[in-house]
Length: 598
Ligand code: SF4
Image 1 (tube, rainbow, N blue to C red):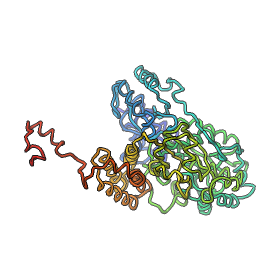
Image 2 (image 1 turned 30 degrees about the horizontal axis):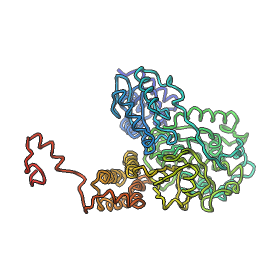
Image 3 (image 1 turned 90 degrees about the vertical axis):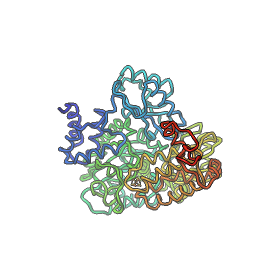
Image 4 (image 1 turned 180 degrees about the vertical axis):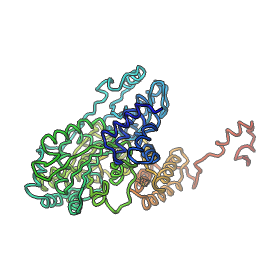
């Protein structure tokens, strides 16, 4: 007998998202939120209604961290676990809660209906330790708060009755510049297309030198022009709000307090390219923002800035829908994101063709991130000179940074491109700094002698993550945390990345355990080179960076931790035989490797 609640949840998901295959992921998220898992009954029902094989649906469920076949219970608690979270005491918080509830990480307790586990960075590096409970963000988890949470779970208090201040996310903007100034007038950028024309807007974007703020730095004007020039019945604008790079949280602020500017930028893009459909792909960790973001969309529809005949212009129809992610870092890669928007596993596509000609459901698609769309709206309203008043020749404008780690003032800073690392450290109150990790785990770890370098595409590019480590920190532990992240987030599609991330991680583990040698360092660099040259997408190509940068930028620290032999096995065979010796009651020399026997 099928459980009627399972059928109801699936039916509600189908009715909200429509009976088409591209809605699959959103329907599964709805079911997960309603039931705490994706039961077989629901999978079977979706299979028959959407025409997708159950095995394919299972493949989607297993791909995303926030979906599961097994029940997670009434309380699904996941502690944010990047290196900054650990420095803030995230592990201790999780262990304290598990101890109080008598639980192990990842194990479900059916009696109390609770599961506690770890997850990748939740974007709260400036206000951790943080966690998600049933997908909603908990911040500043002091030991006192953890004790209260344990009590709430034991008393089975529903999550919506937990103290509201536990769910508070502060803006934490500590320095703004032109992007966040008071220039914005709703509809003005879109209106500019009507008054000065599409080609002038494209020229202004190109003149401004705006490059994608996600880190790759492709010219935004050029991308929009390519899409505008393609003939197609349907075009699509996608905002990548899947801010998954560990240590990055600046889009959180933009989505929380500047969403209308984002929608303006997307509508501007639609006006220029001829798109009718827009999506915001919002990372699952930011689900707490969903309601407010939907509210802002509705306000724009009411003001005729979205929907049919925008600004009274016949034929200018464009609307935006928000899709949630479900805990998969790789979906930040634009072609993986499009696969995910289509309801599938987020496996990167083979390119070319590029999304700008063959994107969402084969339609020409512009994908830009939150910051890029807002900058484009600012340029349309204020002109290219306004934008070029900051930054360098090759990197005009400003960059939002998410600063976390060992500094007095962690938070969000808008800085002009070209600012040096040492100036930024000074601004955020960092002292005794041993290293700065810029651009997340795939980025670069800089040593003090490199702090004169600049944040700019031509020197140190970044999507926005800036993590500070003082001299009390173990950089090898940081690199291992980054490698763990890549092992977990590799989508498994190609061998160099799937196997390489694990092997490099094992070598770092070996070095950390005191068995490393120079041979291991050489092996890491050889493997990194293979991964860089043969991986299918950017994740695999850059996944060995944490290990390589440690070797290149911190050789002294690393060499001090090596054994001075040319090779040391990572596996202690004699120790592993101890169990067998005990079972057979032998402990004579012949039962030891050194004794010549096995
Ligand atoms: Fe997947 Fe890694 Fe290959 Fe990218 S490089 S497709 S993440 S396995």
